[in-house]
Image (cartoon, rainbow, N blue to C red):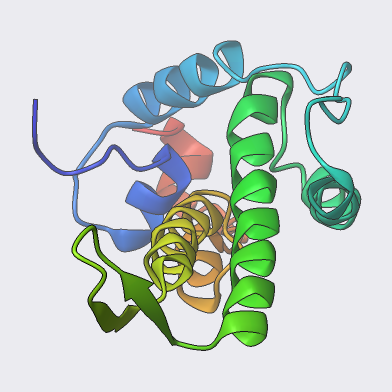
Length: 165
């Protein structure tokens, strides 16, 4: 089902594009809190290689500090770190063999072709970029995640006399 992604209620309120009652806003906040996963069992998966584990240590610390990493995000972050590791390995192979390699076909003819590691590096770079965006690890993604807290407005005379409407 395609469509616009659902925004947290605080962003909807700040955008001012929907006219929701205070009860509807509080109901949405309660639902968001109810479906917020725990972050009490976050461990680096042991199937990651050393480069991916090092990247995991850096990212998971910062994401935990920002309260953006939960138990159910472990798999996605592991894929992100694995893609990072594979980009590094692919780039090392490109440095070693160059952007173009000589290929000998079955007939014995030699052809210069693009190094297959270039395609692998591009593939894993795209995967890494996609997952970084999901976790707010790019400048644009951080701007989308930034939700300034709305300062409480002082009550008007009407609200003091008759309550919130």
